[in-house]
Image 1 (cartoon, rainbow, N blue to C red):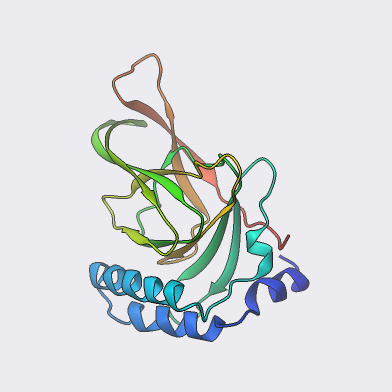
Image 2 (tube, helix red, strand yellow):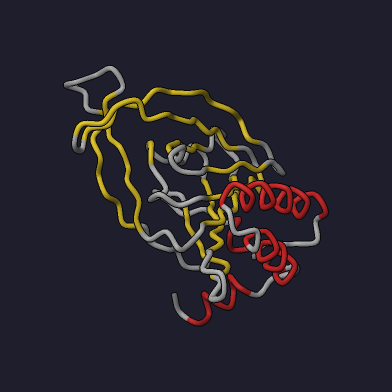
Length: 201
């Protein structure tokens, strides 16, 4: 990320308030307590309107959802990523590399499908779908290992969605799971994916 990109993503109204809110939550220490406080804090910030994300995070990228880092804490180690979902863009089933994450829908709606790991043999994983929900603007949820498997999709044919993801630490790779058609019955094959950051639009 070059300097101009960094400035565009890290200079926005309410930035300090957002960071202070996350710092307050992560000082709880234990991941369940952190996630609970972060969800509350993030929902409050989205409701009051005093944090205005950079304009560039509302611009989608052709071919994939965008990941733009708006803050990385040197003190606490966490990272805040703004994700931009063009119409019908989404992810396969994926994990979070064993780290907690809190996610909030800043604009639009996202379809989130949660999975439980039922069985594993080597690099083959069998998942059971737990349920799907439509997460609207201002809502937040969390993933805490071992319950870290889900898929996300912008179900709109026309609107862009934006979400904020707060990770325990920068997530540079994760596991994605492709359906093992020859096995069926929920079996998927693990593939390690390197995660890149997108520039300011």
